[in-house]
Amino acid sequence: MREMDFGNHFIVITLNLYKRHTNAERVKSIQLKNDANAQALVDDDVYQFLSTDKYYVKLNFLQKLRKHSSGCVFFQRSYKIGEGQYKSETIYLHRLVAELFLSKKKGDSHDLVSFKNKNKLDCQKENLVWRSRAEASRLRKVKSKTGYMGVYHENQKFRAVISYQGKSIHIGMFNNLYEAAKAYNRKSWELYGHMGIQNKIPKEFR
Image (cartoon, rainbow, N blue to C red; front, side, top):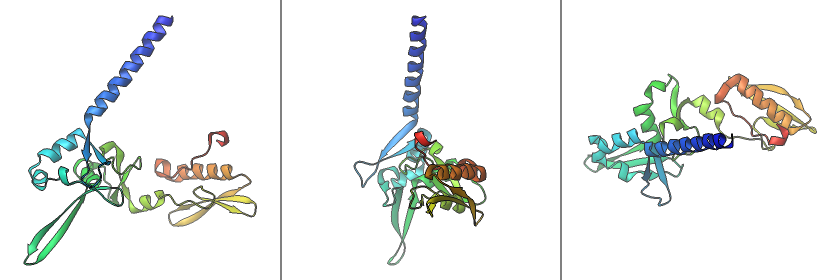
């Protein structure tokens, strides 16, 4: 029985190592020009396209990628459009990847591209998602003084509120900070599903 358990454990480890190895092969790292410690991550097929497409090869696109002050990866160039006149062109890598490879997932009102894991250097397709401006605004981390989204300290109690369709919805008053935060989480999931913000509650108070 011990030998069987060990064998199964060995198989699981081998499969996990294989998955990590194959995933690593599908991801390419691109050194950024202005930051020796920063590398952009893209899928192998994205890298192959950008490194072979005549337009991007001519631009030296991959070689001139830089890290923006916002944390995003971008390419920028200036070119002459007339006598003494120049125009600047800026291409953000995450948006380019979304437009080239994720256009079918773009809704009519979805004109922004966000990062699921909040890492702006990770431009892999599975980490990018099209969002509307309303969704992006709602997902910005704007917390109250309590440290929790939608939770406010009032008269020795904690009020939980959430915004929906331009209106503020009162969820309830709670004696405990974490109960108010959990109430916000439930309402956020009810109204927005996986697109809503979830407060992180300590394990001992969940």
